[in-house]
Image: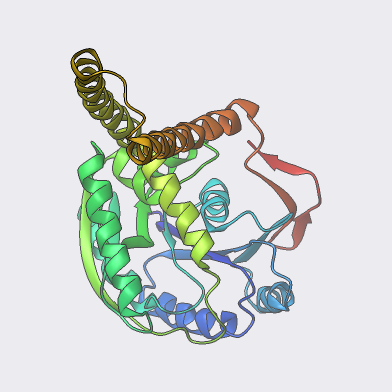
Length: 322
């Protein structure tokens, strides 16, 4: 029988301190799973350290390694899509390069894949090295997103997962610019299996996730899968307008019965400032959605490939994926 092929996709950005450690652990895994063909697809998301030379050096001794060198830093979401586009296996596993996710767990993922699951995803039980504030805000965000969205959101389920070829082909068709892949996994459906693991601290280097990057990802998640913010702003507008109408009638009746008065300047200013603030917030929400529509209508390619190293050859500049 034909050996099934699995592609391990490793997006990385400035991870020179951990790449060799990751490869050594993946190499030990492949020896334990000798019934399968493995290949390793490293996706360079614009690294500026020695990450690329390290991968090329590993490639010299292991022909299963391929390197997809993107033209610049596009962000992890796009780098993962590039790996999905170029994966050739019957299934793929996405894993971070920092070794917070245990490569040894891939063996268990394969077992559930053989039982018919198309998406075997890993959920973090313990998040070592993260602050209490980050854990709290992450939990609160997922609760809000789940209530606001009409699709299943899997809290704490990251990108460490095995995807069957059906899932791969489905995700390759979704070419939106403002990507929130965690939501796309749920949107495409298929049979899913949940596994649990304890996330370790980084094996080396520092995290590339800044507060602004996380905020942008959170905004993508909200605006991509729900229009609830627009509905909330509309509901607030209706309530405020109703209250303003009642207040207007009260003022009108007082003026007719008691005559005009110059009093009430503070309350007038408070009302103007309050309504002005609500209008600016509503315009900001509309602007967020409009900006994403604008980005989608440009229909630009999601990434460019500087060079693709595979086997004994490489593909030079100019490779484009829409």
